Image (cartoon, rainbow, N blue to C red):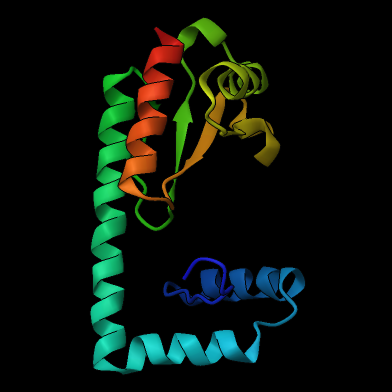
Length: 149
């Protein structure tokens, strides 16, 4: 539910306790309308149908961007719970993810987030969102392909 700041976590208790503690420091509170919308999304037939349709649309976008980026030579792991891919940049850029992202924005007209913005372990990677239409994704991937060739 992009933008609502509503979510949940399931997993081992020792992990969920730590995640909950961190979350409490980062998010003060979700708004009442957002919480009501989340309940409606999960508790009505229409909400369940819409949620399933949204899940399928995101899976289609994910599969499209993952396969397209792999064909272009990017290395990445198939995301399992987000609407982003974290992709290793092409070798000709070495580990300079900031230069790659800047050049791609200026020349290829596609904005990505340098992986180093997320810490030292992200050096040489970029984060690319697929929370957009298939039309926008197709255009962006065409532009990325033209840029790296």
